Image 1 (cartoon, rainbow, N blue to C red):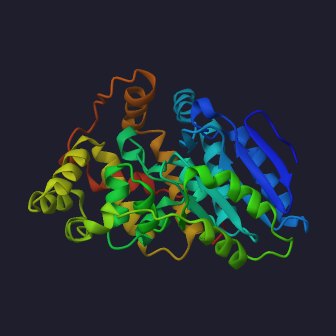
Image 2 (cartoon, helix red, strand yellow; image 1 turned 90 degrees about the vertical axis):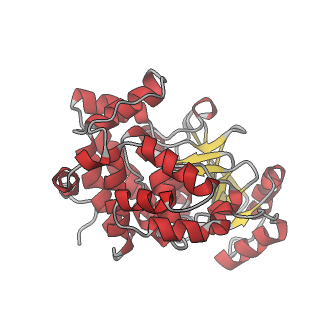
Image 3 (tube, helix red, strand yellow; image 1 turned 180 degrees about the horizontal axis):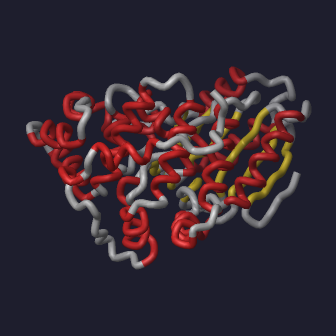
Length: 352
């Protein structure tokens, strides 16, 4: 196995450990990192001395803040194949995590967004802490929730996933567990002890053994804001158009509905309509692979979309937080405009 400056691969007892090591960049994921993580997981899976894998991020601020948006932006501008290569290999890694044959323990401590969700939420043993801040904020940069989120979000309770995907708002530990993106909450101070305890398990330890161990160290995640507002969420976000959702929110009393409506109004109209259509398609999809195939096609369409470049400019490059979306209103985004994102990528990631 091959460690690099950006990913540290190690063995400790019966555990294979993957450490994301770009703390200054909140461990944002790059293609070279994917190319270290994927074979390391394969090697650990084949090693009888390894009972489980632990994945964590270095530093105290974040597990993984997402993919390398600047690379994707520049690749699209230059017309190179780097963006598609990154998406293809990242999505294949997401799928491999979902099918990993050994306990996959991921410590979602701190900021966990975009690509960080792809590295964590598909795993078998997902741990959050009081510092967890998870989001799929892509509609704010002219993009859409990817990394298999169009499979995960529709399977959250009620319409919580639709709320998450459209607003892109950040949620904490209790909400992450409520949404089905995590299993256990631990105090961040307990994570080193958890790593040691998992590594000390025998090589015959099972998934149930690992869950039982984590439960002995678990903390109360507190109350879920999404659970408390489920009635409002389900009433408003069950509509199958963004306009219908906003109309329903306008008819709901309270700060929660007002906040959601205000945030949605600031997002890319194209991204909002694309995201909702992808989430509804994901709801009836047979499996994660089907959603990842669909997402890859939409990713390629994004590279020809004004709002992606404008959103990244406003959020990451100029940082003026004032994107000028085009089209600027939901009414201007036609069904035909969204249809062009649903051209299958060739070759597909997975054969049907």
